[in-house]
Amino acid sequence: MHDNIMTMYFSCLEDSFNTPEQIAILLNGLKDKIDFNDCSYPLIIPREHIGDYEAGISGIVLGNINYITAHSYNRTNRLRLDIWSDKEMKEDDIKQKINEFLARTYTLMPHIPSNRANPNGNGRNKSESK
Image 1: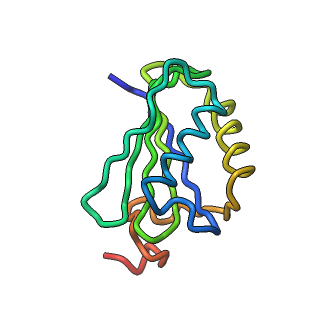
Image 2 (image 1 turned 120 degrees about the horizontal axis):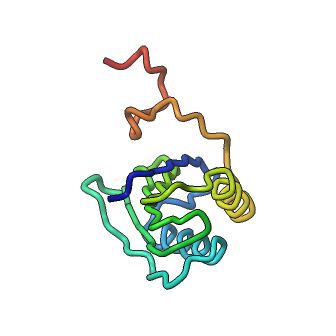
């Protein structure tokens, strides 16, 4: 159904992505920034791992987005946003809007996605893992 998924990763200096309430605040702010139409409030879904949370907002936005899900990784203060669409997205425009919002709202660190295969990893080099 949703053929296009754009994933963005963020790391934050503050403890800003560690609770369901913080994820709800982030998504509500993002919803206001990128002009979702008929958007529901974020739905918070606790994950199997204690301290990991996933949330989503649905709606239509510039670039034909269907919905966005956010996942915060356990005690790492890292955030993954997945932007879902069944149509071609204006990726540069969407990334710019999201980056501007997050940079204004949070103190972000450069995120190096070296742990993409192991999102709960401890940041070690891939060659050290099996």
